[in-house]
Image 1 (cartoon, helix red, strand yellow):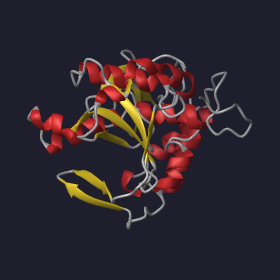
Image 2 (cartoon, rainbow, N blue to C red):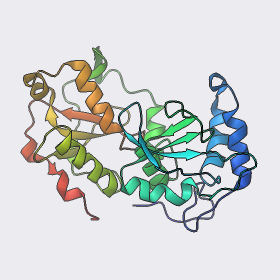
Image 3 (cartoon, one colour):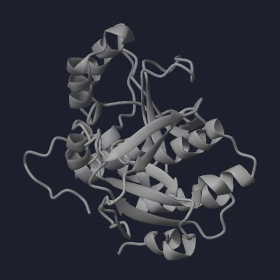
Image 4 (cartoon, one colour):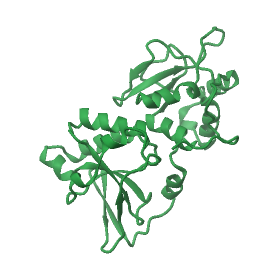
Amino acid sequence: MLVPQRAERRFATGAAVFDLAGTEQLRALCALDPATRDQAWYDRFWDAAWTAALVIPDPPVFTGLDGMPYLRLELPGDAAAFEANSLMNVAGSMVEQSVGAALFASAQADPDAPVYVMSMGVLDSILCFDCPEGEPLEVEEALETPPTDQIESRMVGVAERSTLKAGQEILVGTPSEQYLSVPAARALYRHLVEGWGMADPRVALIVVPAMRPTRSLVIGKSVAEFVREGVDEALMAERVRMLSWYLPPSRRLMLMPDDWSAQSMTPLADLCAPR
């Protein structure tokens, strides 16, 4: 599942690095107005953030404004001695524990004012694909224009509904471990059982050549089921958005079509161990 270890890997794994030069680069980036952030800023940020020497306070984990758990990472004081850690050193255990990361400019910074926030899915994407934006294939696909003569899309509330025109090819299968990592499967399982109240959550991988990206992870609950429970469009969209927090940013999520049966899909519990 993991990207093979190569000399050119951008986000190296292995023996931890605590880079003070990266710390100073992050300090300079944090001092800039967030409104001025451009692609060059993000490139410089990621060049430094993975191995920069940072502080993890006690308690280390807090709940963000989005309701999700984050490890707090702080830039050290200019002259203070500190116990160094780095994102590189803790990312693997954070993903295993379904925790994201939030960088703060100092120990005094308000919990509601991080400089940068990374979801669990971003960290999983770095470990799996050496890229914070997601799987490179899907990142490239997202930049393409879908064949509009084959699909119709419309906005309903805050969600996009897409309808394929007759005769379009659809392939359905089970997500591989490369597509849905074991930590992500475990996190989704726990969220769907505890948050959605699903006794036996199921998923499927659907491939639709007319869509961009072409692959989507299908959750075994339909819009019709939510409607019967009295859940409106906005809350539906929010619940799906929370699930996406566990996945690489390039991943596309969709609810089960109303005419599908969840029993034909793969039990998510089966994907929670290495396969």
